[in-house]
Length: 544
Image 1 (spheres, helix red, strand yellow):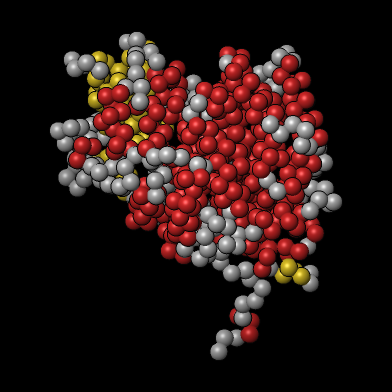
Image 2: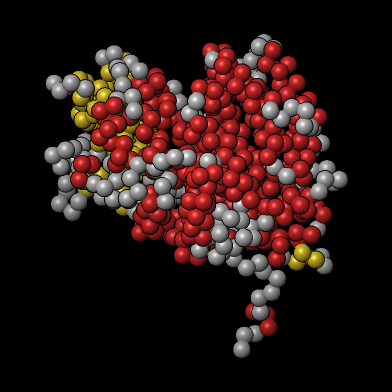
């Protein structure tokens, strides 16, 4: 018999064995709201199956093992031959394989594909975020390749396949492929026009030999990469396969894997090109324009990734508080803890609602929606990803000392939380990109104003925020120095308008009172006490 001192009481049980999709009411409602009703039953079945798989003990263990056993670089084989391969734990392959089979690289090939994929991405990456990188890169490569119909015809069926076919072989011999991307270099960073990698034309039309160094190359175990290099006509986009058609390895020398703060399961690398064979994608000198569609898609995935992490952090905090007792009752029933949880839940729901609205716009594909995305994507990328880290910190604190311990999973969420703000252009890049859209594409602002105008008159605080935003937009003096302030306001007005239209009144009221009305402090847990916070918290509780 165990000693009485070892009897465990007042500990929350693991959050396991539940449907991650069905437990997320904001996500379920977004799917029902935006998806064609004829596709809804099929999508619900797919997402419910994926949600139950994500919440299973087995998949949660895969996530732990993938992070405890990070990838290893094997530059040479036993005989001294250069191989440049990355070795992953089996759990990584299981996670990635399931993500591919669940359609997370197949948005472009089925009706309602972007919305269904976005929901699946939010659900599945709650199990483990690192393998979301190759899923994202593979998905996002499609629009860039479509600038060359011949390349798209050859590669798109492989990219959108539901088969995870691991191992380096000629792409034509594989049932499915993964893609990575290499844009930045050590001397330029986000200023990709400062790239020095050279592309020398070869005899065969459209082919080049690339020589240079990429400071960040994502998913180096992939079958192909979109990279930028300087051709005779200027900065140009190229497709670089890992294995050539004759079965020989392309020159792709992985110098090292990055030792990162988080995202430990995923390989990020530096690579050297030395006469590396590449196929031009798009025209010479138009590399940024060619690859920008890929960048736009991956920026949306940064929003989805942040929304996923925020949801999991909130779910863990609410679950813990619903079981933990202190000072004579459940934590979740204590007014101050309820305020904290409600505040976190608001942030998470606003992120999910906005992310799914963007995914629906991708499915629509019309001119109005494309204009809306031009402003909404950088605004959402800027704001949602920046809110992720403070939310993760506060959610961790809800678990007290337990949250600071690795076994809780909260430290992994915290280490992951800054990543989506940095990837695909950090905050200043997004703010400046939005300014360019305002200055060069007036239709983008018009589309945004029409979108938020759909909620005008429903809440006086939202109406006031829209009025103040218009005043801010009318004053262009010193606009670059205050770009972050402007982008923040655009994102908050957009989130508020969506919640007013779609969320329960308790959620919309609390969001508008705090984020738009100014009745809020400088930390989470400072909502007006008069709000219906219990309803907001209960809505976020992960019970399905």
